[in-house]
Amino acid sequence: MNNRIHNTNIQSEAVIASPNALSEQLPISTQGRANILASRATVNSILSGEDKRLMVIIGPCSIHDLDAAKEYANKLQVLQEEVKDSLYLVMRVYFEKPRTTIGWKGLISDPDMDNSLDVDKGLYQSREFLTWLADLGIPAATEALNPITPQYLADLVSWCAIGARTTESQTHREMSSGLSMAVGFKNGTDGNLNMAINAIKACSSPQSFLGINDEGQISTFRAKGNKASHIVLRGGKTPNYSKEDVANCADMLKNNSLPERIMVDCSHGNSSKDYRLQGQVVSDVGQQIADGSTSLFGIMIESNLFAGNQSIPDDLSQMQYGVSVTDGCIDWAETENVLRKLREQISSS
Image (cartoon, rainbow, N blue to C red):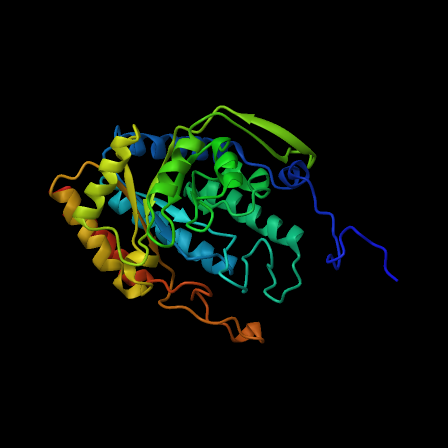
């Protein structure tokens, strides 16, 4: 007879390195630190409206191949120089993926993509890439999914998303109140805006919550609130990026005494989950800005070296280079085309 009453469904347990131990192995360089501080200041200036450029969160749906991610980042750096007068590009660097049921949960959880779940390795690779990106001068955007991982990586991130599935989570709202960068809350998967507006209110208010400190110890944190938080329209049962949708969202923000600043996710519900439609969404948003909209300050685009997506094969050597293993993405050629057209649209306004 088994008399255990604790951890009865736990198969195994593995201790991982503390945030301090990892950051000592992979410290931020002086140049990287300066770049991150500068990029966060720019993001906040765009969010406040002081910087009139449009912020573009762009990159792979998820990072699974660091060589391909570095090639993408180098291309993005060249394109940023070309469009910097009108657009501010922030690379989408997502290491954690929420799953509706089951599936690959991202580089941090399963870097070898074989369900071996070597989290120590995943955290090391993720931080190593972010330090490389910081030295390059490309700002990073990510999604905070597990409330523990920001202690390992958040010092290297310039913008953070809370996804549609976790915007309503009290844990994520509390955690976001203590983050050191701007945070975007997506509307619910059904299109509900109220939960994102409530999340912004909670995030911008003082909060107390449990977490781990840099030594890996369970701690109580008191946060003063993160005022650099905003809504992200990502669609729901129907798209919600139209002029009327944006105006409705702005009215809701105003009625809740929140800044009327809106980002549009051009993928997910707004593209009806068809990556090929993202360009149409970008064009529509660009036209709204050209027509004088002052609410829209940013967009998100899922983009990779090559178009579409792929399933993860049993033989990883058969994987296509530069192709997403999660949501479908537009390819690099279309990325350049879409952003050049967008720059031309909003520059003439």
